[in-house]
Length: 199
Image (cartoon, rainbow, N blue to C red; front, side, top):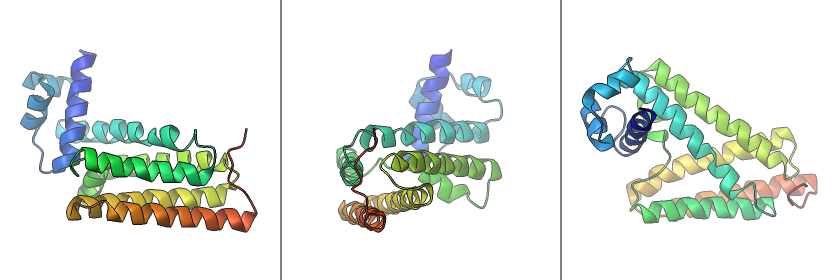
């Protein structure tokens, strides 16, 4: 039965990401998941709102692991950032501008209308910020500067996804990546640091 729940969460994540929370019906999610309609209320007795909250938290935390994939193994901070944004460009091109951040669409929709979902998106963004702060500190940045760089990365990435999907060009993502790299170079130069990964 866990497999059914996972399929429903995965289907919800994909459909919310593409069509938004309000624009996605429970029937669509169940059909996408290939699950019996009654199963969605078995796993999510709170209905669409509970499903939406779990989708945000689950897919958001999975997405946060991309930091570990692209930046953590990098030999230096600048290389890690460049690799991260290059990965975002690849995702946009490979999915024909359909895929982006798994929670941004929902976050924009519910920020002032649905407190449980707003809280879920805020928790995910804060978790990303904490993870990024820890990760950038491993490259020699003090906590305050590491948090600043993390927020620059997240805000630039989110904004770039919106523009890229709307304009159907990766130019905004390239510009966003270059801007975040510039922030990193400035922070490192202020510290007299080379940005190499610490053992």
